Image (cartoon, rainbow, N blue to C red; front, side, top):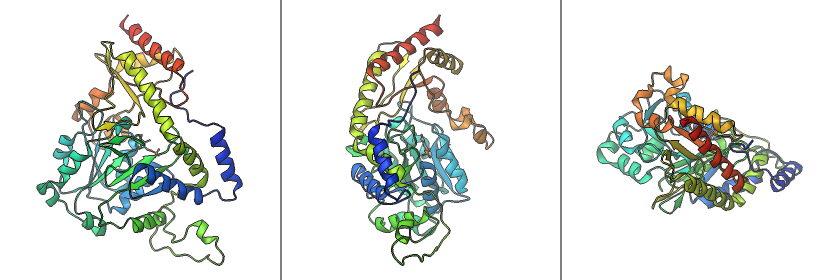
Length: 403
Ligand SMILES: *Cc1c(COP(=O)(O)O)cnc(C)c1O
């Protein structure tokens, strides 16, 4: 069976984790701090904070931004449930909008229609690793009429004095937009290092800050390190220094720090990340070449003059089929020992969001993208021979359905 997205675990990873285990320090410590610095260097943002998942990092971020009941956060209907769940937990209302025709990303026109005086943030998802139209989103929220209806509450919102643009960059580590890397494309970007992502730490994530100059990023860094550790003003490592045991808690915090065991994996992954991207790119090119002349194949947009994907997901779509037929094709692919996937079940199809009144028919382009979508395996260890097996399995399955 060809798996869908196994992690790349080799001797190098095992050696690094072993060395972290033997170092006597296994929770947040020197390796996490080094990993944060290297993320910042790679992405070109101002400061980064490592956390235990995208989800908890985002939860703390929404808390810091002062979001709560009565507020609205705009996001695409086409994303993983985490993007919306965090908004629900913050007390604000997720305002879902449709995606573009040309790609799987949030539509700027749809954002325009959804903005109200209650809008506090936009979560733009770089789906499959393809960056959103950040310049267009920024121009939109800076339009005088839209900026003027922003209703700031609290110090941070007053300082920014406009809607906060957050990038859900769970897929896009290493992606490029107008010469800059994901992580530095907007106010704040959030990465996921979950086991299936391009860069993994088993579980993990990072918040990458790139706010305007009137924000002090050193203070932001310190505040977030405190918020992700119960609000304690000293971390465990600092408390082990001689006589340095006393600490204070000024506000109740969260608990979602990254451990040095996770960071040990991340440091290896980051050190060879370009090699990972090159391999993924080659797999994308093989899929493109194999499907571009098939009349039934809709290949994904992943590179333009302004944007280069991080090659996270290859979202193939099959023209002219129903959702049911897509599911049948997937079964026929699985029957040939190839794992495929669907990214994603749109949020309005999930019980949790149906119950909250969201309706699939309000997001026609999301449905259009989802109902015939099949994600193909892409990962460093996938050999050219296996790529060919995937291609054959897909072609056989599609012709199998047509018969
Ligand atoms: C994986 C994923 C997340 C959640 O990441 P975790 O690290 O598992 O919390 C959020 N958004 C998108 C688009 C994802 O694919």
